[in-house]
Image: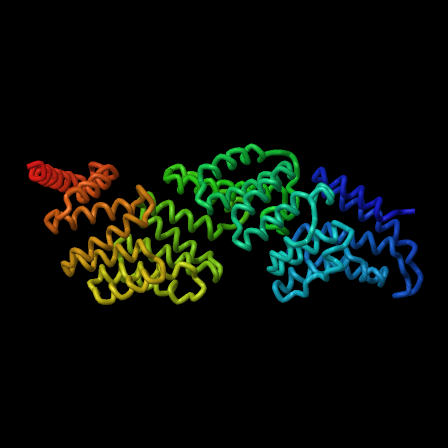
Amino acid sequence: MIDADTTWQQVCTALAGGDYETAFGVLSAALDEAMPAVVGKGKGAAVSPVAARICVYLGSLHALYGDGAAEQLEATLAEARGLNPAVVSEVLYLALSAELEARTRGPEAVPPSEAVREALDPVARFHALCALALAEQPQAALDIHLGAGELPPHLRWRLRSWQADCQEQLGHTADAINLYAEAAHLASGLDRAVMIQEQAALLIQDGQPEEAKKILDGARLLYGSKQAINPGQINPGQINAGQGEDEGLNLATWHYLRAQALLQMDQADAAYEMIREADRLERQYGTPGYVVALLSGQILSHLGQQEKAIAAFEDALKLAEDSDRPYANHELGVALLDMDRPVEARDRLEVALNEPDYPYQPEVLADIAECDYRLGRMPEAQLAAEQALAQGAVIPASLVLGSVALDYFQLDEALEHYERVVREAAPDSRDWIIGHQMAADVMAQQGFPNPAAAVAHAQQALDNTPESDDWHGTLQDLLARAQTLMGNQDGRMLN
């Protein structure tokens, strides 16, 4: 006589080793053995609790494949109801039903009941947690008491992955990073690689590219292993079609993330090699992606290859979903501005500005102000820049306001804007250097009322300006003049 719980233990043993084919085989064989008891008893009259329970376990396995297996999950739960109507009161069935509804209805789904969230069965609590996360209720999901050790091995790293996803939804980046690290520790083979990549993505987002690169280098060693890729790894609940495609696309993601880290580390040439390989792998194993095209454009912009950058951003725009289009339009607008094509740039930036949910609208306003400034529309440029400054785009708005003030020969006001740039910009960044350059230049135009401050600005700018730059000679001259004035002042003070 077949036993559903014993069958489930056999399935979990297979899943712990990543053997999904054997797991499905065990469930299918057990279901076949349990089914004869219901054959020939009249439609709708037969009841087989064992077969129904096996169907529910099969549903748990289908659920790991995410949205791509929603139809199979729905059919399996329907079959379980047909085999035993009483199954609808079992907590695992209810949890899986809630997860299925959350996958199809999102935030509008009915959440799992408290009884399901507090069920004795840890697998039921796991699927309840998945349902709440999918329904965009991350805190409720995290409130479910569930330890990794309570779950079968194949669900332990997934639990940490879902919890990391919930912490990320809540904006708790550090907690999410730690949970992805624990998920990677609990996983093996390519599952571990993907969890490391999730951790690296958040480290990059958190401004820790060196640490991201370090762990990505370790993840690369996990590729090429014979272990099959398990479902539900990139985003909890998503899987691609074949093992080769999975590994290839995940490796494309690895190259993409490494390119991001290298770009943040100001290693644009190395980043370009990485993003080219990411693009090649995407085309080989899937289709070109928006994020790869967008990052390609950003790297090319950093390398000063603006024409190629514009082409990459245009590709990104073609590939973008509606929610991504303002990002692509913004990047394209900035690239066109860098090519001194302010009319075309402004058109793209206006499109991005008209997206009410785009989070970088203040920066778009500042870029539009720069377009207007280059077009000689000073009042419009000043108004847009003041709005951008008020909304938080301090550095780009201040640069435009400084330029406008200089054109009106309002030197004190211009200096105030450029000194704000120096205070707010990251040290050694492009904006920080420009701030120092312009502050020193304005002080020179004022006649060096504070030569010590002029020396400080000119020296900081000179230390970060290559000799090939036209500014280098200008800064040397400014520095020498300011130092001479300091010496004269010191002499008068000594007398």
